[in-house]
Length: 89
Image (cartoon, rainbow, N blue to C red):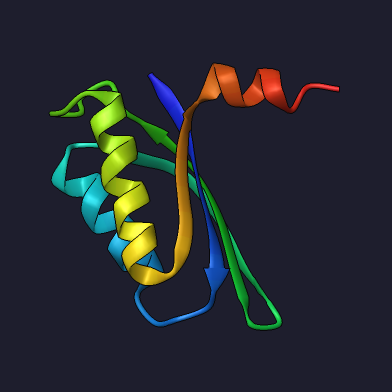
């Protein structure tokens, strides 16, 4: 299953590395990534494939959210179909 990971917060060294470390540790493949820094704010959107993940989706979401809280960021993951439905005009 494909999913969308979003990361928003104050820019700091190691944000991409922290997120990718969690994803790779749990066999989640990064398919595409877009990131930018707007003044001092970091934003990133990742398209990932969770089909080979070694833990349930909800647990992965909790891990990412917890990592975000520890870094002072908002890190969320949503299933691609839900993300698309929410952002359809």
